[in-house]
Image: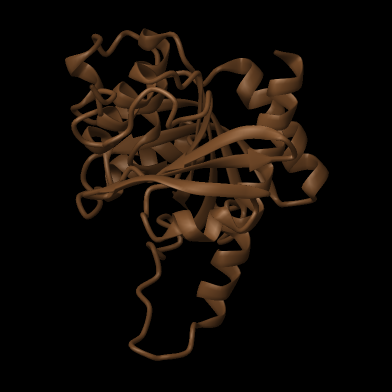
Amino acid sequence: MGKTLQPHLRVGKGDVAPHVLLPGDPKRVSLMCEHLDEYRQAADYRQYITVTGKYQGVPVSITSTGIGCPAVAIAVEELCSVGAKVLIRVGTTGGIQQDVRKTDIVIPVAAVRYEGTSSNYAPLEFPAVADWKVVGALVRNAQRSGVRLHVGVVWTSDAFYAESRELLEKLAELNVKSVEMESSTLFVLSSLRGARSGAVLSVDGNLVRGTKKSAQPSTEKPTEFSQKMVRSIKESTRIALNSIVEIAEEE
């Protein structure tokens, strides 16, 4: 009898390393795999692509989640069911502070739960906080890399096009660094399932400056901005992987 596979990720026991990176875009998995010493594809189903390999001798998996908190909740549940212990989101975010510029890096310590998924697991009074050891490793490795870094609270939203000017101004006054669509559920559900989680986010726009995620022109050649974002995502991947090595050594 074969091993039992998770219904959405199509992975089973032994397919996933204890340390997992979580990009949103499935196409980003191949970009991130360039940093691994070796890897194999464990599964590819719907938006969930999982590869497992090694980085500096440490077993690592990468699983794409797609967009939004419902999708990331499925990924966290099923990854934890097959042995994942440390989950780091490697994604993008839109700045809501004037000094949070495109291609900067944001590392959240916590997230505003402005979404519906996590409330199915815990009341809104339950905080969405990243694991302090994961945050510490991410910050140290980001500082070593020399990136422009912002550390603080992010806002997790369900509705990409529904932000009001009043809400943005309120969150900016509260010193919330940026907006994205997954971290709060990742943090809450990881806490509930006994996993440790964090996030490292590349800034791809700034809402208070009026620049959302940049629409790319229809052209065969990548724009200068898209090339800079690829470099930023590669840097955030290196930060996450080096953090996993640090965490694994501590363990």
